[in-house]
Length: 486
Image (tube, rainbow, N blue to C red; front, side):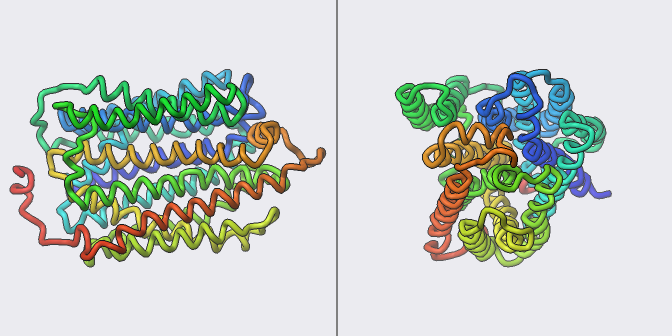
């Protein structure tokens, strides 16, 4: 087998495993809230947020470390750490323990995510990268579908702890395969130097922002400290950009943003993540909460169409963008998703499977059309020796956008619903035997969130339409040796 296909197969397994993990946990959250001791709505939310937050914090630094020490070496390490974290999660005895072990998973995921796209980009010539990244995106969908269905089956039969144990055999095999099959292509050229100040400021800013949002919205702390935490967090994120502009070896390489193709792709990626980040989270509680109270398995089946449509359009879009350039597919993807979100903003309290499927297909098709061309445009715009950092930046933007999207969702819900209602929905304590007067308000908050999501996608669309010529149009591939020396 050609080396590039060995790379693609292994990195695809990595993406598959992480996608399975994300959706398995998501579909099981209401059950975890009911069954795991010492778990409240805040703890339940941070089972998701803690994972996304730490992954976002470490990605930039891990991308830089991979450019210094070797992408494959740290990629293999990531597999091993993620597998260990999954094993520990299954033995959690309290909600806080589960949050902590999810952070171990997040460290492993950071190594995997910060290197997967860079390793693929190194192995494939420019005229094949869109297709390769598109195929890799399919694993996200297969994992998403598998996670939703497997999560529902496992949670409803043998228990939620096994949703973590399922990662262990996959991770063990994939770690050994990566160690045996992959080798370094891009040679590290930098002396190790870690940007400690940038790391601390970025981590502190994002953490304070999310703590203020979640604890304030759920009434865990008074309003004034919550607002202060949010303001300080945003200020630190601004200071982070200032620090990185003056750091000799920054974790966020701002010089990459001098490329308009890179900057535009990164901005679109962030806005897209903000729009879609909380979609599955919202729909899981819409389906398993009032007034529907569907089982975890049935709720998972309802969400299959969005994943299946990404699987259909993702690889096709990647292949076509290699031939015609990414711009038309990026525009089509953003428009299609925006229409799907506006349609979702009209759903009723007891929407049938057939009624919910068309808008979910539109949202998924839009994501599929957008993802591979946008990532290929971003990675191609980065110099070969900086692709570890570029991959880390891209995935950090996705994870940060997703994490912030979950926080904003909570803020919107708390502005419409009483906090007691939010607690009941998240913990699964609302049930059919008791009246739930806030069910209508819950649906109103969902509609508002989806309208805002559509607006974010329209904002992301404006620069691509306004740009006078295509970005990242395909060119004849340079010789591999020449590219390695660039």
